[in-house]
Image (cartoon, rainbow, N blue to C red; front, side, top):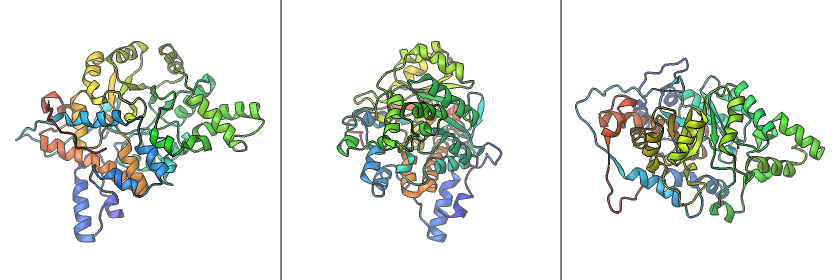
Length: 420
């Protein structure tokens, strides 16, 4: 993508111009095409994005990001749930200028869009997490670093510069290692702790199984652990070697601790609260009763999510449960949403059903695969532009205007065509 195209984009609230409309990005695309014969790096069609990435990636890498649990029924449910809600636009409203800003946990952000934690980004492009976090910083999208990263906590903190960043924890069984990871994240400016609850063991994922592929077994995606002083010290004592010297053993040790097959329990949240002095958000909440338990545990937020259909096959679509979860907790904590977001209108629907912000996962990674960090940036800018423009067309001037009056549940037989 040309430099002239990039420099026209909206910037982060953190010290740069914040009022430029996201929707202006589509005008830049048209100008680039009409006057400079430069087309977008990545398709702007959400229904073609996955295929575009598939044409670039190795089969193992593509299957890792595109695949889901079992027969992918949960993935289908996530998208179908969005198809059951339709926009009801309003006219003659003052929506020429839209305000997309939101406040989460006391901090103001440019928009309600966050980059979801996605692991092992080096298998998609050499730009990996450091590149993606860099461009997220440029456009003011909070970057959530996965524990299963191919870049270290410190490297991503440096690459994201002053941009907002959160840390996602795959919760180890070893408390000493958990405490070490939290300290590293805190010391490196990660503001919010996102604790993933639904992945204490890897699901049955046929696309990966048929290829006999799990990157962690060869050390890929284990950078967080291999750069951790506590993990290294314990490994040295047990094997009389560094992780680099005994890569297979180190990989087995790390994966065995993080994806142990042993679930944590609600009472153990106390450990996280003791060693993290910022907001704590629990990711993977689908049941209203669990949302209530999160309130009792004293956390600050939850993410209504089924891990994008990657964990429990046959689970209910996350959007289906969002209204019940919001009703269950009221204003006692902040509800975010994840799983199935593909378009700007999807974001409006999730916000209208009570979410305060949403996480974008696969689309940005597909963009990364096709065009590196600039491809991922274009995808995120496109989703933001779609959100901005669609809000205006729907008669919505700010995020508070995304409410139940703007949507209606309509179930058409056969209404199943959607991006995967």
